[in-house]
Length: 524
Ligand code: NAD
Ligand code: MLT
Image (cartoon, rainbow, N blue to C red; front, side, top):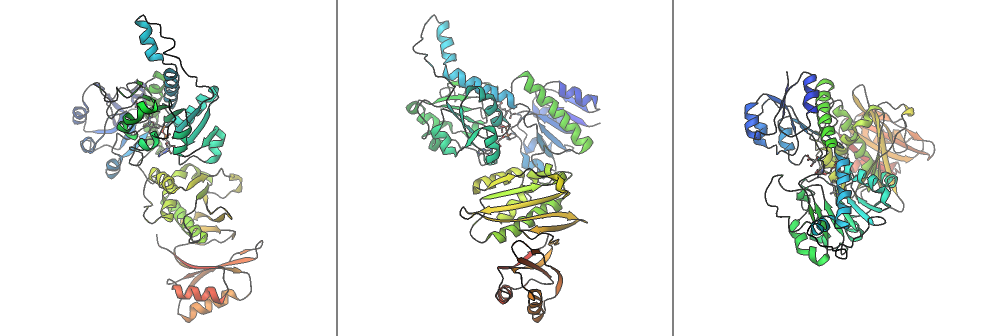
């Protein structure tokens, strides 16, 4: 019987669901965590909310396999240490988003109409109508940083107020932004133009301290800043230094530590709540149900979709990640030397569609040597954001019957836009590139050394390439030679026993008057 430890105030429904499925559940929100883990060292699953899960806690649970964060933010869990110990960490994305979106709207209205101070004043017998003259939300500009589950829902909930929404999120495609009615903007534009700014990004190494003086200085006088995300993303001292001068209103829900006691932010915030964002019966119930359901699905069906600290989920062969790497590497060479692409468009066919985010790291690794292909999808999303590379996952037409296949297209430049791309699949457990740019039916297994030569079609080219290689004692193992009828171009790909030296590549290029000629080596 697997033991599940729930050391937090989580709706009892999680314990009921798990017990019904035969798990042994310990639900105890009062005993301190170190004591609890010491008493239940045979725990296999830990379901937590904002409790800090440190290496010390993990080390006390040698049988631990899974940590479930019943909520969204997992900055309180040492996910890297968990990975080192082969422990999967999941969250329950979206389970409490509506509660937070509604809290943000409550704060916007409350601060705009001075509800809290007006209530306190009226109770004293005062009648301060002119002091509490307010503003309306309708028709204003709202800026949202982070358009994930909460950010997107906030846009939806705001729709009745007819506001203009500016948004920034590195992984939001222009198509989805359009659908949501969000004007994609830079962080600076959001801070300079919005009347209300709401933060909905995770706290991590990239976002810690991101919202600081540089941005506060851009804000309009009287603008409202709302932080219902995490305290670490906002520099409170910077805000304190500029708040009065700029007449900024600040609404806060989050702290470095959730605990009673004086709050250093008390003088700074116009509204400050005890981390109430997800504190509704509905959200607590949904997060509890999702945590239990995800635990059961993880152990009974191997469902790992919500794991946040794994580069390769169960059900996805590492070969598909190798394929994403190779397709991107080849497309990158075709794109030319002048810098990285500004956009990557991907299509994942068949069952691969559900693993799209796990291809991001190999794609990033093919574009930048310093990025390791086994980094997490979150690392990859940050890499693309930092480099200003937009990633668009296209809807696919599965009627094409490509099976489990993928296409990766890279775009660079504005005028003209340069495009290079490749499609591939895995057949008989081998990587297979079926298309490179407009050369269909390539059917190339890319492992080893390959010489690629593209040229205006003419007879005798393959013979001349073979002759030059033969003169240097280079053995040809295989040849692929697709032709593109539309452009009249041909591509010859020669698999060789050794790498073709650069001087020889240049000689071949010159001899056959090639458009492109390059050597490509892939050793998995
Ligand atoms: P989510 O993962 O669905 O969305 C987060 C979004 O932020 C993603 O789309 C991501 O691409 C984007 N992002 C990451 N770095 C960014 C950056 N530098 N600039 C702009 N966008 C960036 O998560 P969510 O459910 O929307 O929750 C967001 C955060 O809110 C959580 O990480 C959590 O810390 C916090 N949260 C607080 C409460 C509360 O009770 N106050 C409740 C739930 C979540
Ligand atoms: C979250 O990240 O889900 C929240 O901060 C909500 C919570 O656990 O209270």
